[in-house]
Image 1 (tube, rainbow, N blue to C red):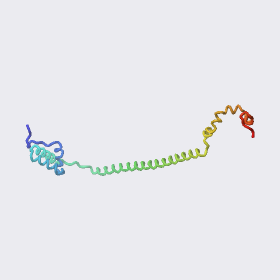
Image 2 (image 1 turned 60 degrees about the vertical axis):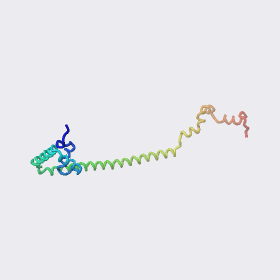
Image 3 (image 1 turned 180 degrees about the vertical axis):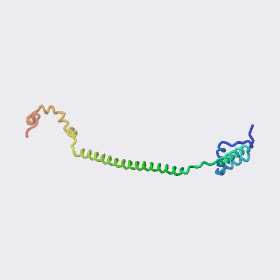
Image 4 (image 1 turned 60 degrees about the horizontal axis):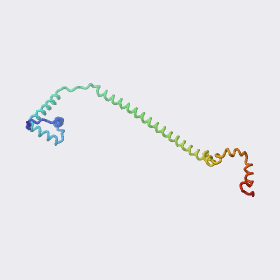
Length: 167
C-alpha cells in the first residue's frame, strides 16, 4: 500500500537538517525542499512541532553558572601551557643551532681529510709504481743474486760469446 503525501516522513538527512531549517541557516534549495514536504505531510509537520517543543523546553531549563574563578583558572592554564611550549621551542632552536655548528665542523674535518689525502697522493711516491716498472728485476732476482757481482756480466759483454765486438 503506497503512502499518500500526508503520510510522508522526513528522511534521516532531512531530519538532521531540521535545526538548521528552524534557525533559517539552510541553503535556499534545501529549505524549499523541506518546506514543500512540510506543507504536504502532516506527519513531517508533527516531527517539526515535536522538535520545536523540545527546543522550547530546553530553553526553559536553568543555565549552569560558572564559578567566578573559572575564567581566571582557564587563562592561567593557557598561560602555563604557552610558557611550556615557548620553553620547548627555545630548546629546539638551541639544539638546531648546535646541530648546524656540529655539521659545519664535520664538513670542515671531512674537507681537511680529503685535502690531506690528495696531498699525500701527489707528494709521496707510490711504492707499487716502482714495483711495476722494475717487475722484470723482481722476477729474476734469484738469478741476479747467484751472479754475485757485475764483474761477471762485464766479462760476458766483452767476450765474443754474444757476438759483440769490443769498441
